[in-house]
Image 1: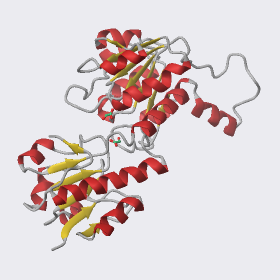
Image 2 (image 1 turned 90 degrees about the horizontal axis):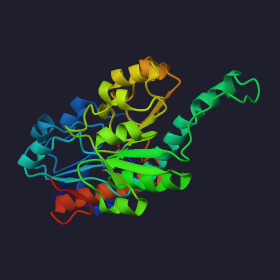
Image 3 (image 1 turned 30 degrees about the vertical axis):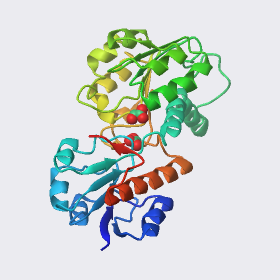
Length: 323
Ligand code: GLV
Ligand code: GLV
């Protein structure tokens, strides 16, 4: 008997091919570039054995109840899993697959690109060239901040944080600080110093968020946090939007409390086009594209399909999230 699988989005064809080639699944799919509407998700998961989902799908008790007792595996095409109600999932004995490692390089690269774009004011410069605001080479115009001689502070030195640090050091970074739950032995190769946030925040010229979203990191960057940052410092967020209090960020950016912010993640996603943050020149917002290279998204889709199939078969998953 074929196992029922629901796929919540149009994904790269490599992953879909793997699912159909396996010949074990009856696949239904929300075949769209838009997230599945909640009602369609609740209908789609009915009697499903497996669910292949995105970080845009909130998988909570309601979804699990709609699926019913057949559901054995949830495979998310993401490294982050804050959209999954893990306690509810664990209670029901459902296994979870995710996609760490394969997106580390792409996400670190995008984080570095965002940092440089924000610190050196690339979007502002591009805009000025297009709108005629650039009149001539100017000794004091569009100056920003460089990495050479700087102190970089990374909050959450996991796989992605470490890959960001490795890429930044060759720009002439003088000191690498990091904060998180635990010291990381691998930081030694970069002379990274494990410090409390109270040290990292005031001493860093660049603060990079690569932590996962947890109760400890939710709202971490608030008024008090920004008030301790250097006025010349730049904040970069590749984690999740809610790690940053956006009202406080707006205040810090518009009052000159901090120099600039670059964010690949926001709350909500997308921000409404009239959002206050989008009116600020010193705020660069990207549409959550950390892992968005053709190659990486292809590999992610394959890994997500492999995790799903392993979960359906009851065999070892390539990347299982241990709950
Ligand atoms: C992206 O944010 C991911 O979690 O994969
Ligand atoms: C976080 O999950 C990371 O890969 O750094």
